[in-house]
Picture: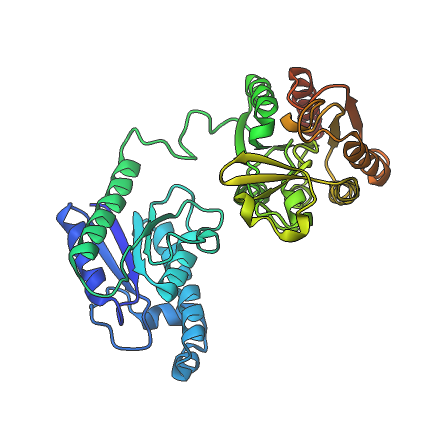
Length: 415
C-alpha cells in the first residue's frame, strides 16, 4: 500500500491535517504524519515528532527552540524536515508528500519538497499559492494549490479544498505507481545522451529544427523556456552532471538581468556549463528584448523606449546599442570560462522574429554593437560562426546542431 507523508505544523493546524489524513486513508492509502510545529504542543499525534525534525536540523536544536523565535524555528524545522523527508524517500518509505500551510508552514514544507526528485509527487496547499510562488517552488515540480480561505479550522470551503487535495495527491501517487507510468529513468529514451536547449516563442522554429537533427543523431533533447525559472531549471540540470551538451540558443534572460526585466534567471545564468565541462553552442537569441508585464507595469524611466505589445500581459522593450554592447561582453566573459569545446553562432540578419528587417525591433546599430562586443571580448580559440540569416532560418538551426554534434563527437573520441 503506497504511503503518503503529511507534513505540517500540527501545533497550529492539527485538525486540518487530521481531516486531510482521513480523506487520504479513505482512498486506500497509508499516511505518515510528520509534525513540523515546534512552538506549542501538537493537537494531532504524529508518527515523526517535531523533536526528531529539530534534531536533524541542528545539533543545538534545544537551545534554538528555547529562544522561541519564530523565524529561527521555521528555519530549523525547514532544515530538519528536508533531511528527514529526503531520507524517507530514499529508503522508499514514502511515495508522495502533501502539506497545508500559511507562511511558515509553506516555507517549511516546500523546503523539504524542493529536495525531492523530479517526478516524486508533492502537493502544497497554501494561502500563498495564488501569489509569487517562485521562492517556494524553485526549479522543481511542486504542485501549489490555493487554500482560498486561511488554513484555520474546518468549514464549508476548507473541507472541499482539503478533500480535493487528498484526491490530487492520491491521484499523483497512483499514477506514478502504475506499471505503465513513465519516469525520467524508465523511459525508452533514457539510454540516449541528454542535450538541453533554451527556447523562447521568438526562437521556437530554430530550436525545433535543431532538436530534430540532434534527435536523429541519437540524442534526447530537453527544451527549457527562457523565462527565468526555465533558465534556472536548465542550469540546475546541467549542474547535476546528467547533461552531455548544451544548445543555448536563447540567452535572452541576460537582457532582463542587465536591464531590469521580469524574466531574469539571475547572474549565474550560463555558469553551469563551465562547471560541468561539457560542449556547448551559444547564440544571442532574443537579446533584443526585455520583458515586462502589462504596459502600465513598465517603469516610468523607460517611457521613451521602443516597445512591442506581445499580448495583454507581456510588454517587450527593445535593448539599446549600449545595453547590447554590455550583453556581448557579459556573454563573452561567461563563455571564456568554458573548458570544453564551445562555438558561438551569430545570425546577422535577426536575433529574434521581431528584430528582422521591417519588424518593430529591427535595429542594425544595436545588433552590430552586440556582435562586435562578442567578437572583441571572446578569448582567442573560440570559434565564432557568422551566418547571413535570421535566427529562425533552417540553415542557422542546422549550423547550430551540426556544431554541437561535432563537439560531442570530439568529446567521445577524447574519452
